[in-house]
Amino acid sequence: MVYQNPSSNNNQSYIDPRKYEILENKKVVMPSPKPNHARIIRNIIRIFDAFLRGKQCEVFSEMDIFITEDDTVQPDVSVICDPEMLDNIKKKKKAIGVPHLIVEVLSPGTANRDRGYKMKLYAACGVKEYWLISPEELSISVYLSKDGVYELDNIYQIYPEYELEDMTEEEKAEIIMEFKTKIFDGLVISVEDVFEKVDSRG
Image (tube, rainbow, N blue to C red):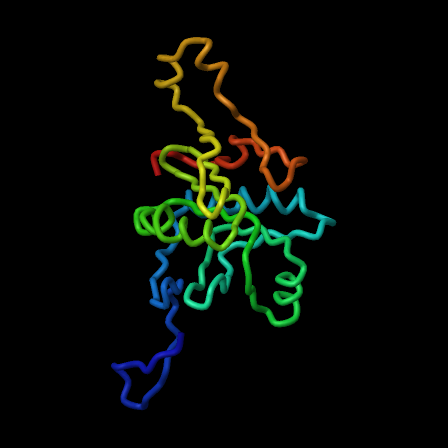
């Protein structure tokens, strides 16, 4: 965004360094990601990038996606498989359409939107799979689209030692540390890989 600098006498303009999303045709400032937030995004990009090498789909991070006429979102991670959408990105440098999978990493400044308006928006637009990741809880909540709304498929989590100590062996055995995405049956996601180098204390 280019603005006139109010403190300048020669009408010099400056570029606003902040990032924005457009939700319901209104600008919403995106907070700068914290280190754990950035680590999780990096880890997920690395996982998908390795799997998608040589395949049609592509993984992107924090890219403007014109998902409706009134909504331009910047998901933390998006996986796009639509050939027309990918062709548009290549030729026009513009992502117009609906990704197959979106990941949002929760932060205090975005959690309400990620769980509220954007979740409803993604479901209504046809995003097949939606992950909400909590750096504090070291958890991945996976939602799947059904009839235009999301249903929680499962929650995958790394438990702290003090919680594990209170669990029975049966409870520990039920903890799932790997899962498959519904859009890529051949891709196995390791929960530990998602949270590599992430410190739940911040």
